[in-house]
Amino acid sequence: MLHLEASAALPLKQLPASGQRLCLVARALVKNPPLLLLDEPGQGLDAGQQRHFRAVLDRLCAVSPVALIYVSHYEQEIPRSVTRALRLAQGVGLVEELT
Image (cartoon, rainbow, N blue to C red):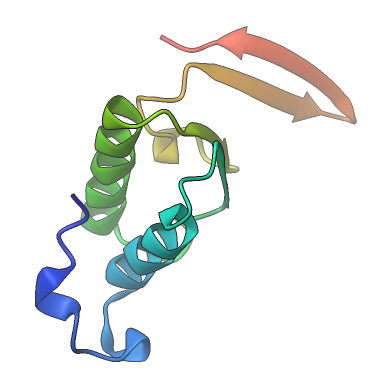
């Protein structure tokens, strides 16, 4: 599902940033965790890499029971599969439904 087959023989440091992130997600998913917590995973990715990374996360959430917590300072980085947001402002949190 992550389409990493072509990169299997390469050292991690030789992969583009988006490929490195996907390898780390794959490593995190090996033991089928109930929760995947990603902290600023889109940082350092260009717009195309971010789109691809979000699409992979959306597919992952659609086909597996894993719950995803996605931490970001930028709303445009949040995958569509994220349905609720906790926004913090001056130490106060507000939970809202995303559409």
